[in-house]
Each structure stands twice: as structure tokens, then as C-alpha cells.
Image 1: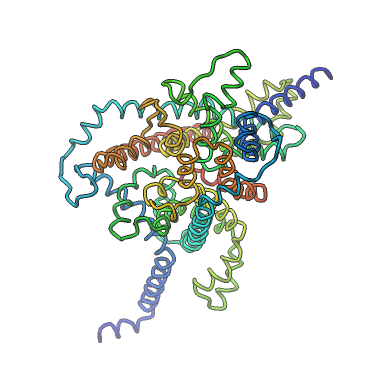
Image 2: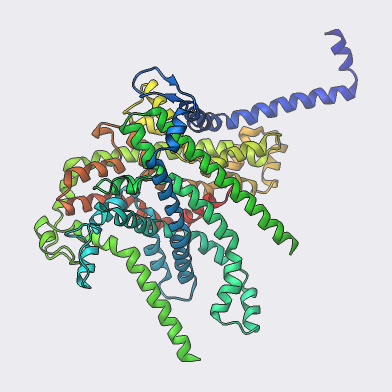
Length: 314
Length: 276
């Protein structure tokens, strides 16, 4: 005590103790501001992810308290489960449809809205509506759009002389139908991203291209498209992550007899966990989904930083 | 030159019309079917304007419990969105305006949340909800909804707060105001545009949320709209106009919100697309 009192007489030490005190106060303030958010985030996101990995090494029905440790048994079962591979394949199709259908469609919508067309405001509302509806509502609406007897789609097919298809009950058509609906619902999402990116392209680039004698198509390929590359890349990550989050639409639109042909990781995990009550196995599927999301985010980050470095050089 | 321009313009309009038809027709079908009686629907499933316009479907879905789904959805959405705004704004204050060692790491930790597949949290949240005795209670949804809305909200708030000029808080600092005063008197009143973006964006997502409600709620009187609709589907199966009217009603709130606040939703989406 005495020593401390003596030392504190020295002005230079005095400043550091004041500073330390100040700093402790600051830390306390920071913590109190972030406490609630960190608490909720830890309790409902970080801790559950960790638990999912722990559960994935157990056999457990979720009803009894007892969990039996089984090591990697769930994982080896998963890798030899044909439904897993089927689901994974379908998730890849989802990504494919996002990248090759939704993104181009979204870009097309954005280009239309960005042109000198009349009625932009109305068009942008119409284009965007599908994204706002709840996915369950979207799924139910389209179940009837695809209805084999009264659905508009089959009626339209009949009108041009094609026979009705029982879309959701047969093997390739069920998946195709759901993927069409996905494109319908999510293309507007990409539209918004591209709309913002298009606004960011400097007008001078088009003027310069015009002076070099470029026509509209050349302008698109030499000015618009290269300027959109960063957005195209981040959209593709979103497509991978989005495919792992997909559940509602497949849950609502599957189940009229197309079997596992419309199974995706999300619905597969749900079935095993909440229908078959295999909590351990379900956790293994969920853990794999997390790993895939993580890997794809890392890959994209790497590509992104390479891109940035390239741009930095040129 | 002029005929070429003309062809281009007309091509543009044709393209716009095709996309508008693809995007809009299902809505036309849904709305017009919802005003038809069953008889009318089966004789005339595709007429855009119903021969006889009836509201009977709308009254019957209300009789079947749609109002309680509505009420539940309103309660949980309002509660979750209010909490998210408060918690996220508080957390964003130190992240955006104070210097400390873990600042960047904590921010990144929040942002990574956007990439987490919900399924990776489902089983532990289900188990936890059961253990705490919240299973089949509307409030069980609050935690997950707030947690999954945090990343995007923290992101938007942090961006916005870091753009508030430092001079604004200097005056308060000179008067000896602490962080709480600065936050509540200077920062919070200045982030109104960000608040409305966060509110609207999360409103749309929480209103439509399905999987947590599916696994945590069981009794019909606790159900939110999305699972209520799913349940209707099982019960209505033949009464397509009835189901369509339920779909219309469930979609109206978000559609109105969008028409009134299109920009805010777009901003939220853009925020969500930027990776951490």
C-alpha cells in the first residue's frame, strides 16, 4: 500500500494508472454494449454449431436422454448412403440453376429496368414480387400451377398439343418443376444486386466505347460484363450458400410420389431428424452442410483476393 | 438508323413483356382464383375475371383459423424485429465507433453468421427449447429469429454508424457525456434510415420464416402463417379458391410493405450480399 502510494506520487506513473482505469472503464462499456448481442448469438448460433458436431458422433433418438458414442460410424454411414449422394447432387443442380438461370435472368431483368423503357416503376414491382412472397405460399401456389388436371401449365401445354405431365409425381419432372419455381422466386434477388452494380458503372466508359465505334452488343461485352465480374463472383457464393439454406420450397413441393429424386440436403436432414428421429445421424448431415458452406466461403474468399490483386496490378 | 432503333426498342418491350408475364401471371392466377366459388373454378379455372365475384373464400379461411395464425405472426414478428433493432444497434456502437483489440474479429464473427446454414443449428436449438420448457410456445421462436437476424442488422448498423461525422459527438464529449449518453442522444437518433432498412428487411424474412416454426411449434393455435398455410393445404386440397385466398392474405402485408418501401428492402439485400 505504502509503496503504491509513494509510487503514485510520481506524475508519469500517475498518468498510466489513470489511463489503465480509463481503459478498464472503456472495456466495461464495450462489453455492456455488446453483451446482449453476443449472448444471443452464442446461445443460438455458435453453441448449437458446436453441439451439432458433438451430436454427430452419437447415436440418439432425441426422446431418451441417453446418447451412445459411436465415433465416426454416422459419417461412414452417411458416405455410403445413396440418399446423401442424391441430395448432394440435387444441391449441385440448385447451384447450377442459380448460376446459369437465375443470375442471367436477374441480369436481364436489371438491364431491362436500367434501359430507357417506360413504366419502370411498375415493372420493377412486378419483377420483384415473387421474392417477397413466403416460400411456403410460393410452393403451394405452384403446386396448383403444375396441377395435372386443373393447372394452367398443363392447360397451356395442351393448347399447343402437348400432353399433360404429372409434374410433381414423376422423377425428372418433379425436380425440374421445383427448379423452375426457384428461378421464378430468386431471380429478382439477383436483379436487385445487378441493378445496384449497373448504376455503379461510370458513364464515361460507355462514351469512350461509343467513340471507338462500339455497338450496343460490344458495349455489353466489353464494358458492362467486365464491370459486373465482382458482383457475378459474389452472386455465385451466395448461390452455394443459398442452396444449403434451401428447404421450404422442396419441403412443400415434394412428397407427391417423386421419392428421393427431389431430396436435397436440407430436406434429407429434416427427414432423418424429425421424421425418423435419428438425431445423431441428422446432426452428421447438418455438420456436413456446415463444412460445405465453410469450404465454399473460403474458396470464394481466395478467388476474390486473387481478383483484387490482379486488378491492383493492372 | 431509325428503323434499327425501332427494332431495338420493340425487342426491349417484348423482352420486358415476357419477363413480366412469367413473374406476374402466377399472381394474377392466385388473385383471380381467390375470388371464385368452387363451381366457378371448376367450370372456368383460367378466366382472369371471375364471372361472379365472391368473397366467401375469404370469410371461410378466417373461420378456419387464419386470424389466429395472423395474430401469432404479428406478435412474433413485432417482438423479434424490435429486439433485433435494439440489440444490434447497441452492439454496433462499439464496433463502429470505438477502438479496441478484438473489434475486427468480433465484427467478422457476426458477419460469418450470414453464411451459416440454419440446419447446422436446428437439433441443438430443438433440444434446448425442449429442456427449457419452451417447446410449442410462440416465444420459442424469439431466440432463433433474433439470433439469425443479428448478422445482417449488425452489418447495416455498423456501416451506417461509422459514417456519422465525429464532430457530432465531440460536443457531447466536451460536456462530459459517457458512452450511454452519446449512444442514446447522438448516435441512435442519427441512424433512422438504417433502422428502417433493418426493420423492413427483417420483417419480411421473419414474417415468412418456416423451418424453426415447423420444428418448434405443434398446436394449431400457436402456429404462424407459413405453417398455418401448410396445414391449410392438407385440409383444403380440393378447395383451391379457398387456399388461394389464404395465400393472398398471407402475402398482402409484405407486398404492401414493399410497394411503400422498395428502396429499404433493396438496401437490405445489398447489405446481405456483401461478404465479411
